[in-house]
Length: 170
Image 1 (tube, one colour):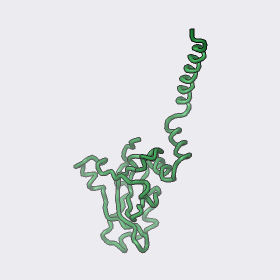
Image 2 (cartoon, helix red, strand yellow):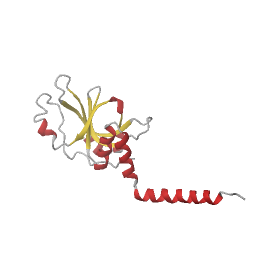
Image 3 (spheres, rainbow, N blue to C red):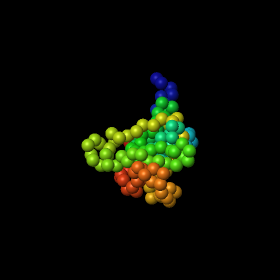
């Protein structure tokens, strides 16, 4: 009745079997990392790494505003999603003359107070507004800025274990 029905059925079964085998071999995390390496703009790779390793990042915006914190939501490769969500630990700005980091706000006490859930402090940043980003190690920071209070005595300190890394939403 249908001359190629057997061939079509075999092709469908082979496609289904191939998809199942492929998914078993190539896990979702590996596939995501492969796509990020192939199509990212540098920021995506950094944010994926920071989220995977529960590391803090330092983000400087084009306005010279700086956020240091944990990546909560990672942008994917679709053009509509060009934002990153960050749980800030501290924020501040870069001095206009020296570009030295001046920390003005410590979010730790407010987050630890527990009045609102920690994720309510999430800051969403457009990738287009980010001038630079890097991993941030609060233990190494004092080695590069031996006396952050020298120019700005009101500067809060950066405490190494201010916040535990939050769970990441993918």
